[in-house]
Image 1: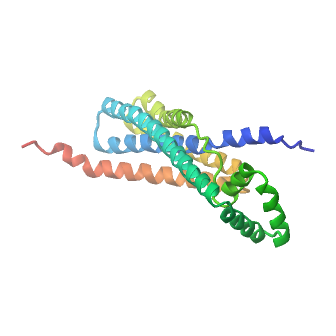
Image 2: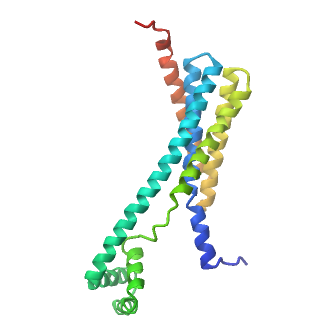
Length: 242
């Protein structure tokens, strides 16, 4: 029989799982972006070295951009939530009865009898802090604004870099552009399917392979689009400058 985690350990588990968003998004974007660059340039230019250098530049810029974006996004979210919580607490201090009534209606709507909901609200009202935190969680869906902006930025940047290396490494170590592109697309497809499958497994889905297929479809569609765009713009490279 499985032993349930204690509340403190459960909380730490949920905090770790919150990084899944950055990891999945970063890996997915890194793989797709780099695969798209390789596919697009392979259709547009013939120089293998040019393609690799462009992909490396794209990888570096993408990792820095994604890391900075995740950092700034998390920081902005935390600051906005903290500001809203401060305003809510000011309103609660001025009109506590309004929150009490709203919480009573919420609890009654969730199945408690009105008498039981009233007793719960009355009990919580004995501690303004307990009442306020319950209202924030039940009515507004807000918890403590404890997002770690620096950790999110590092996680996102590292995940993007890891994903970018998946199609890039086989392309670098295989001598011809055509064979390298095939290997890059194969590793891209396998990686995206694996990430999608893993996400489905974490979400306890019965058919994890469907999640994997969704990632795979996106990867192949993006790569095909990038290659076709490269073929379309290839003639522009031969147009003489004025």
